[in-house]
Image (cartoon, rainbow, N blue to C red; front, side, top):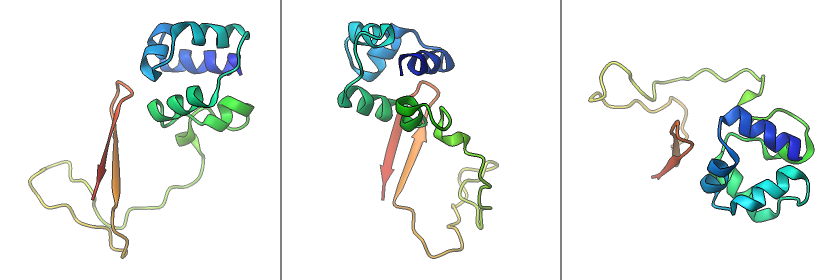
Length: 119
């Protein structure tokens, strides 16, 4: 698992110290995990999942699958209505044609932070 964590840090282009600060753990704990002296606990993995929502935790733990959960090679369903309009933000947003309502929106930023909006 320590090799996969190191691979993830390289993919995210963050240092061990930056990573520890991002997920709120002691820098020494990251160093010990990468050296193979310790194994990450539940809190460590939970903080990783919260701060890196695209990370496939299953891959990190078992090595199976892909590093990022958004790398699935399944066809994406086509949108039935426009959700965002790029030409003019003052226009109203059209709801999808189906009868489902949006209950939560997650916005991910390039600094690995995110915001959650509820209806």
